[in-house]
Image (cartoon, rainbow, N blue to C red; front, side, top):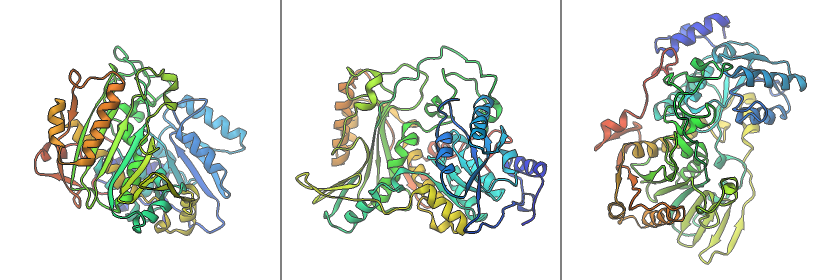
Amino acid sequence: MNNISRRTFIKGSTIAAAGICSSAMLQPHARAMGANSDIRMGVVGIGSNVKIGGKGKQDLRKFRKYPGVRITALCDVDRKILDAQVADCKRHKEPVEAYTDVRKMLASKNVDAIIVTTPNHWHALVTIWACQAGKHVYVQKPASHNIFEGRKMVEAARKYNRVVQCTNNSRSATGFKEALEYVQKGNLGKMLCVYGLNYKPRGSIGLAGGVQQIPKSIDYDLWSGPAPQAPLIRKHLHYDWHWDWRYGNGDLGNMGIHFMDGCRMAVGESKLPKHVMSIGGRFSYKDDGQKPNTLLTYFDYKPVPVIFEVRGLPKNKSIAARAWGRNMDTFHGVGQGVVVLCEGGHLAKNKVFDKAGKLIKQFKPTTPEVGANFLQAVRNGKPGELVADIEEGHTSAALVHLANISHRLGKTAPDGEITDRIAGQKELAKSYKRFKTHLDANGVDLKTTAATLGPMLTVDPRAERFIGDFSDEANKLVTRQYRKPFVVPDKV
């Protein structure tokens, strides 16, 4: 393939972001990979802390251990964090190029593949630009910030024949896939319901009390990227973006996505459900967080529904914040994971039990480790070998977006009204009872603090759009208004 200069690529990327770039203007440079070739990797988004970093630093440590991998480039909009990581790489005898602007890094001929661990609102654009530049991509969960972006990521991977892996724990080497295959063969009888559980207490992010100063080490224009360059009204710019609609997807998209993906694996569906409805709220906290910390979502899959429970409060209000992580409720012994209820028993994580709760079998993983699997697919030039291809990541992330859209369009409703609305759904009614019991244990009275009841939205699974009641409002949240030049293009 013809190479392009760094300046030409950056110019082309900017035009592409505005949605007016032709394929001839953006010619990727990618070298052929042999079985024994070193894979030169760049990391985009180091993390939120100079000392401990974040997922970017964790993935860097992980990938540098694989044979035949060289870390050659780092990118982070926070110069303080970037410089600290460059120094760490020098200690590991890794000569790396350092960038604050990802477009410049993608123009480098010294990078074959990238790891994307930015905030969620950057995942899609970095991935698309990387595919256009001939790079392979290992992108962290959730794949996208909205439904439109995820589909464009898939289209870019296919158009440029790039290997794009999206990490979700359910497709990792945990034994879950093997246990699920046992259940799907009918060994526990008919499947009745699939539960996704994310019981992970999260503390309040507090009240900033007004606009905060942007640290001098951060290029806030680049940090904001496709999102509005809005005033900072939260105590911590890093990480707390998860609870801001402009950048994150709440804990459903932060940790819950791992198990949402597993739920979809369990029902064996490659598309979106016909309907979705949510019940939830941000209870107990008076802070700058916008996302629900307790959320119950019903996905109308056939022949069995998926019900997903998010609990961000501790087991009860007496537990100190520092001990929250060790004090979660469980459902069939699971606090975070997937539970599949069947006529003859249930699956919980990588174990299957009979109706009496007796362990039948625990499964060991045969699934390839996702990082090694990614590297093998890159070397072989075969995206079809991926255990967590971007299309799977997109569809599962879209479930997160469906749930959040229902919640954002919802209205507070009395407990009795919610109970009446879900009375015909036996398993959902049981979940709602647990929902109320959990809130009561944390001192939340739904008579005085009403939950938000989201509308039952109807989805066109093929078009990945809403139809019917509330569709006009819901479809506005399928995508977003992008800030030039950081525009996710309609045509990749």
